[in-house]
Length: 414
Ligand SMILES: Cc1ncc(COP(=O)(O)O)c(C=O)c1O
Image 1 (cartoon, protein in one colour):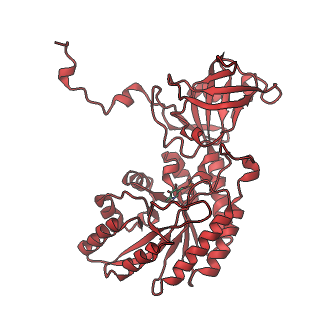
Image 2 (cartoon, helix red, strand yellow; image 1 turned 120 degrees about the vertical axis):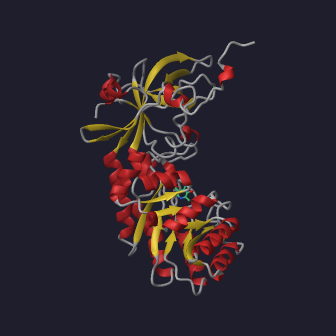
Image 3 (cartoon, helix red, strand yellow; image 1 turned 30 degrees about the vertical axis):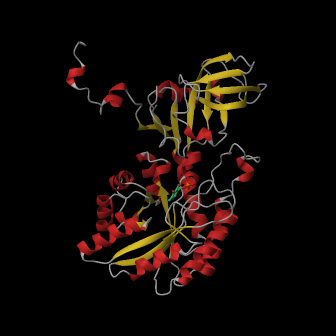
């Protein structure tokens, strides 16, 4: 799809989603795990990118939904996901949101005892036993996200599971772990599977319906302090599955529970790029060349962690690969000194009007982007030769829609 044509039709900057990549990522992940474990379901982590068109594509492929708020839960329902295929996680589940999830039969993973008390009350009110998973956190290698759920090493996780099992109104239905994000070492998952298996075997009497291993698989991106580029460092789905599945199969009690996972970035990161235009070039006081583009940190918050690949679009007439590279600082359009996308990066010579593509930015950018100084641009999905809107560009009217100006402020000042 010629990038200059896309920009002529839809403007710049422009988010571009590849439907083919999205589908093939899902299929690759599902295949890698289904080959190695008897019953698998992949629940897409909505917060990574909850554009409805993105979620709907993954649901067509068979994805369940993993949500961490009432708002995300509503998007999943609106897209037709059956509640029993929605996993409700996170530290804030409002009582009314829990009530809806419980009554509709969604999968709920418990984050705290406060939440347990609410669910127990709901079960009493409904007069039936409510199934509940327990989120477990653990220390594995350098990873220790201990603020979510209950800690394994200090015994809290076991106690929480026993507390659920002891309740006449609750049933322990699953164990949930989410180790962290962009985990480049599959060996850490093997350790996690071992610890999860040990915990499951210690829960005599529990009939676990599922183990949920969360997300965290890395995508083809490069962290600032990462030496090897993504093509060498990012494990394949098969490598992750090989680290996880045999350990679970040998350690979990029989009959094996359903294996749930909640990938986010590994499914969507590479399926979305941002097209942007050079608006000016200049030389800074240090002698460094600055390239100013029309997309800023308000659209790409993940530049704080990743050295995203930036390419010159071949159609713009500038030599994409043949030109001599120059070291430049890539700045956004915001009138704020913080709006720097890459401090010292190598680009072929560019000039006003050159189109650039910031690659693999589908994860955690759109959902964390904001209108700040500039409204957010359109999102389109490409599939072979066709292009369709997933989201229209924001307008001033849209941005002001929720605002109210008290009448007294509109008259002349005294
Ligand atoms: C509970 C939970 N599941 C899944 C994910 C998705 O993680 P990732 O995008 O790294 O796959 C997250 C993100 O942090 C999470 O908090």
